[in-house]
Image (cartoon, rainbow, N blue to C red; front, side, top):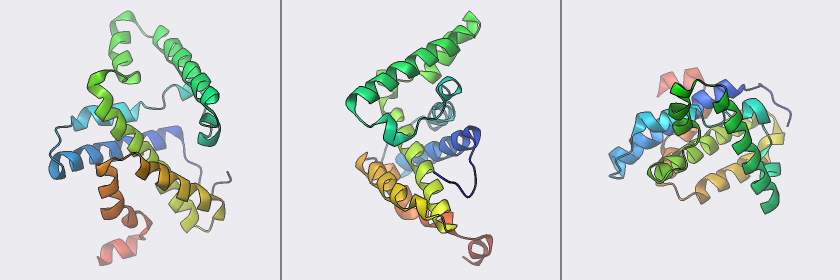
Length: 176
């Protein structure tokens, strides 16, 4: 889609890490969870690393069909293996635990990373929409629906409490 402002993978990853950290803190403070906020931030920071090889495939294409979804998972696994092969053996296991966080211990954190990734995409949509780019109207709706369908109470809290502030100008932030 046409963007008013391009966003780099590094910018998206950093924002996703900050959002995931915030979601973990929200879970710990308001919902009695015991998330490792620092680990979830690191997982989120690296969540799209395989895109070094694969590039960014748009979400509607990734999830077009069950076959496409499965094929893309296989492509990501291959990209992960290629990335890990370039690391010294002494570091490969450490990074594998970050890049492939599909273990049982990280399932709850994976949900926070997924929610943070959707939040980042939603914020991008709202910023584009707020700047007059109507191409993001439908994407904002579908991204918000996808986010809320995750059943992540931390993300729902974030949407209610903080999302509106992302559209404030500096002057409006200073007023309140």
